[in-house]
Image 1 (cartoon, rainbow, N blue to C red):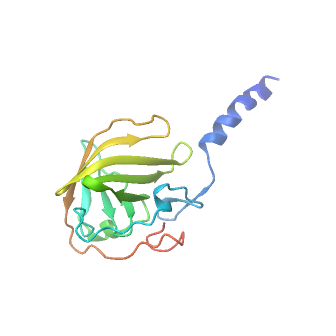
Image 2 (cartoon, rainbow, N blue to C red):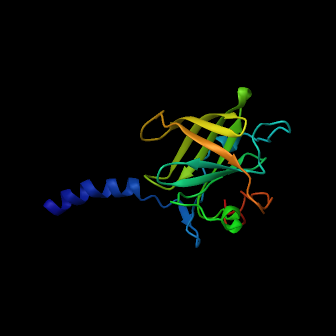
Length: 180
C-alpha cells in the first residue's frame, strides 16, 4: 500500500519534468518536434537600417561561463552553450547544433524580444527583453515559466569573428542545417 501511494506521488512529478516532445541530436542539442514559439507566428524581417548586426556575434561575459548569441535577418537566433573559455576555432562559431534555438523581434526604440527554447523543467520557452545600444544588447528582464518577470540583467557585447558562415537557418526541417 505504501508503494502505491509513493508511486501515486512520484509519477506525476516525473511526467511533468521528463517531457518527450523533443529530439536529441547526435551533436548534443535538443530540438522540439512541435515548436511552440510565440514569436514564430509573426513573420519578421530585419530592416536594412537596423542597429542589430547579423554579421557579428554577441558575447556574454559572465564570471564563470561565456557564451554567444547569433542573429539572422529572418528573425532566428541561436544561443551557444556556456563554456568556461570559448575556443578560437572558427568552426565552433558556425556550429548551431549544440545550443539553444529561438526567435527574436525588434520593436520601435530598438527594444528586442528574444524567445529561446531550453530543454529543462518541461521544455521552457523563455522570453528575454532588452534594448540594442550600438555594439551591445542589454537584457533587462527574463520571463521564466517558473518565476515570471525575473530580473537578471546581462550585457551582450558585439564582436566580429573571422570566417563566420552566412547560411540561412532552415527551420522547416528538424535535421537540416542549422538543425532547428
